Image 1 (cartoon, rainbow, N blue to C red):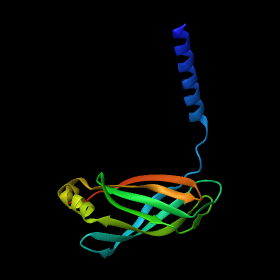
Image 2: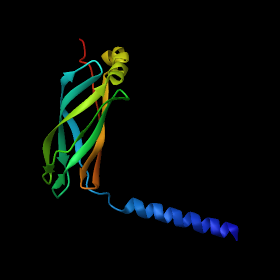
Image 3: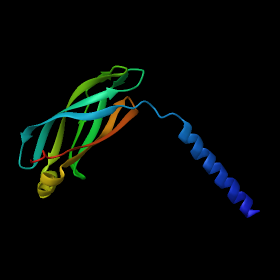
Image 4: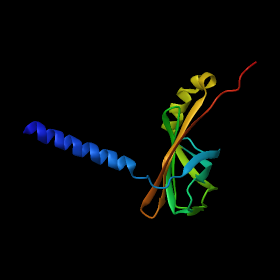
Length: 152
């Protein structure tokens, strides 16, 4: 009898998981770094002006009223930011959003410690965060790398 209940429970959990996997996920946005420039460099804190390219691969426009994000370099947190700027990304279109990110002394030191490896292996970065439309989040996660130029 216990084996039957165990099997029934397992079948129910499996059905729920399979059913959830078939529901279409909500609209998503593709976000990448278009430009990153130092804005203010201080001993304890650094500020960067960043342009994000936000692409909307969905058949409807998406209006957002804020965002939060973080940038990792070579697997270590580098900078973070928030913005309350409203932006509308047209259907099957894109927009450039200008934001500021802040890093602190410890983030800068973590990056400096790994500078030697960057010259040979390149720089891996990850941009992750969420745009918001009221309470509804639009998460994004983008990874890329910059390779050093080949020396002939």
